[in-house]
Image (cartoon, rainbow, N blue to C red; front, side):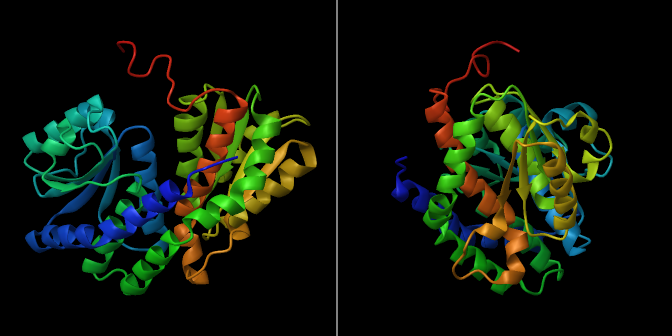
Length: 330
């Protein structure tokens, strides 16, 4: 199926190009000083931010980082939040209701906001204190922000080399799309109309399983899903797996991979309807082996855009059509 390689490549090049500005911005924030860092999002943005929190945890870094759902934050708050906190957000539309409310609350409490906002002249574009704006490359924003904070706190001495690997990863974007093509087509051809799909992942891909199920399959394709973590699978879900149960496994290369291998071993004994997407299957030029696990979320996010396009075709359902989201009052 046709896809525009120039668009795919450009989004990743956009990410590569925004790295220097993000670095300088984080440096300014660190020079001013901060007490802790809050990643605040809603839906997919909160989930993708939590990927970075998982990575920080796996690195064993003691960065004072919290992830908050914007709606919860507005009502509940957080006892560790203060005027000396720094907030980081992401928004494509720039006008998500809960995010606007959260940023307003942050400012009321006296803290500042660093934001990646794609839509120019949008409310959030105007409200954030430090603006980073580009198109289709939020993952590069999150990685650079997180690892720059780590570097400046002397918690990640490999920063410079790691960032060069991220830049090299951008050159693999089209190749990842192409390598994902046959499996993406096979998966959607057989599973485009499943009544329920289980999406299972671990570690820094766990949030992606939730995000893809919620934001793409449910919101954009109206398909029912059940995302869950490999660590929770054997505490309930295993009992409802049957021969025809549709299961998608998202295997990364971080330290939690054994959790996925355990799930994979079990489900293949029970179900004949299992698909495995494994980042190890992708050849990457210019990316060192030791960083592949850290970068698994970018690999999977890129590859799964191929699945989305096939779903759009086989279901005859454009990805931008909604029934209720932003159409009804709620």
